[in-house]
Length: 315
Image (tube, rainbow, N blue to C red; front, top):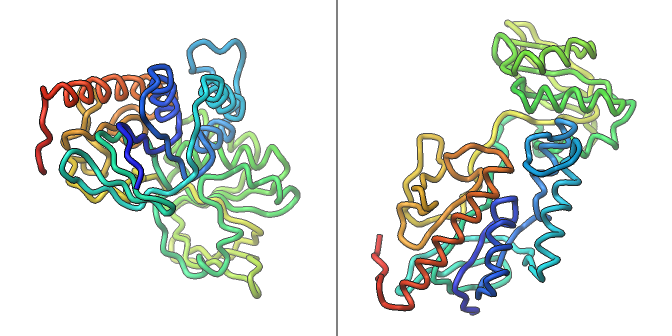
């Protein structure tokens, strides 16, 4: 069992930012990420083509470029990221026990920066054709160039993904359960310009095909069953905070996102949170600031603990 002062869970923009400040302080910390660092940042921006909202960039920047900028900054300072999956957090005397797939850790404070994950969906055939069903991952669209694909979800991300998939050469249909698209008008204009087939008031009932090859999806549109040919499905039905591992009591809002104060501290003493996992604005630029803020106050709390100014409270 390894003991550290600070554990940062998640290497998105918030986690990388917290890691950068921890590394500059030469803190006794570790940064854990189950995927590649900033993977969701890369995916979300690439599906929208580029970002112009990150302070300091000279030109329109892709998600891939921004991911490299952030991770290279961290690596330049000597920062490391452990590829592992956190299974549980347990409050103990003097801190927390963090269990991962590979190892157990004891940490005095925890910073949760693990972002979000796709919402679950219960449709017949989902498991059978899981290799052709992609959750928030348009980067996988390149293997379906020239083929039929379906995007499920008509909010901003779904509409942007449908446009992106069309532009790289896929034949795209979009399915939305509501009676009209939920995306902004600028995204609706992109869909219309590209002539993407849209099914509203449509309930997805089944993924179908032979053996393990997806060939079509079955939807019901206003009482009528319709079969849509497809080689792949891209799910954009919403996201949720990726905190299934967090089995300690922490206050959340009605959607399950962690509530933090101005110091990015949660309701559990010793646990801080930053980025998309919180109730705050879900943008890369704000996540970076929140990550730095969370680390600063987590480190200050650590200093106070070491000087016996604070004591942990069981909750």
